[in-house]
Image (cartoon, rainbow, N blue to C red; front, side, top):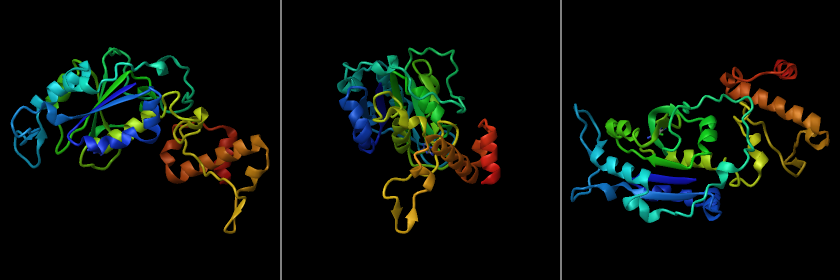
Length: 281
Ligand code: 6GU
């Protein structure tokens, strides 16, 4: 998988090279290019924004800068070519999936009638569609994802409209709050997507049990010691009875989901045992 990020704050994306994602880069499962948008600025002040047409506060990012930047990112040309790692194979595309999302809401932005040979352009914006685990799942099989980080009041809309000629374009939000720019959203989305690429996460089965993967939140976890500061690990977890432990974990998931995110329960198919747990809990 290849990720390119266009931003006026490249240093903000430094964490992409660390920890889990850094390991994926070393293993050649992933390559990342972070590009300073000002490389495509044309005036001597390297300006990337201008006042909004129609008036109003703030600044809007200029189409004459973004257009050529996105052209180069799609083609791996111009300044983008300098950080291109052409050795990027894509073993993740042929590897078997290990994380079927049984029971999860599978609604994504993929309409199926689009040209999958075009790269995916993700534009983080609080005005976008909410990013979900199902999107992370869908995008974990992409060959090439380009992120366009807007600042200020956003990017001239014609940039997004025109990019649809070379990309499959998605405007996405990571939640109902406002950030200064898209950089932190890129870190969030990239981490959620890349950890689902086979070979990146150490324990392959661990995201079958993730919150959201079955439409429920995960219940509490415990490790040793059995007793700590007068608090005991729930006895069932020391019983060695795995059917009983699985049932207990499912019950904890159901109860936590109802307490914290009751709306998620509406999309989950409940067994008779599930209903009993909710009635008694
Ligand atoms: Cl993706 N970008 C910005 N700037 N703010 C946000 C967001 C994205 N998602 C929620 N707030």
